[in-house]
Length: 273
Image (tube, one colour):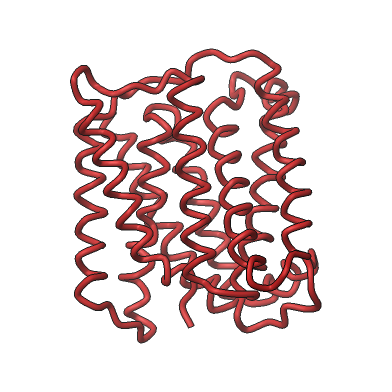
């Protein structure tokens, strides 16, 4: 199971550095008119920093998939939330300053992950039927519609709503990645979860980029972290057989809460000016 944590931490590091590159690129382009503009992704991909950040996202996603095969969702998603700690430290290279409370949050993120590492039980996913795979694809579409509506919401709620919707799409990426069929190329291409991963990933990127441009970065990032950690963690425990080591449930809950809460304290690093 230790190597699962190696891949989870590698994913967090890749996502964290990618966030610095992508956030600088996202602020350098015109956000367009109100609502969700799919052309925003076209514009940001003209920025070399966004392209490099996306390449790191791909590396992080592949590492996340490996980690999801052997670790519970609550452990992997908490590790991904810790990418904000990586972003915060990486942002020092472009002039950002960390206050004492933010350095403390970085330390607490690491402590939370250590507790999760001591308590999580490594195992594969419990079998689920085809209906569950299909439901993830349908949920991706439903959340996408909600995101489009959120883009038309009043200004004061638009950015938080888009951040939460982006987090839910990333949560669906994690759930689909956990159960995706990898036995053969045919099984992979015929699995609705495969398409849920692709579509939810693109929509999550679009909604989060829109949230960064249209309001409070801190609020949008905090809600994204909540969306991408809480939902898959609950589903993992209730439906996919995620468990802790015997007698370590309280330790796991404490580690998860500590890692996520400390990550929320670093939410302003969801975008670095």
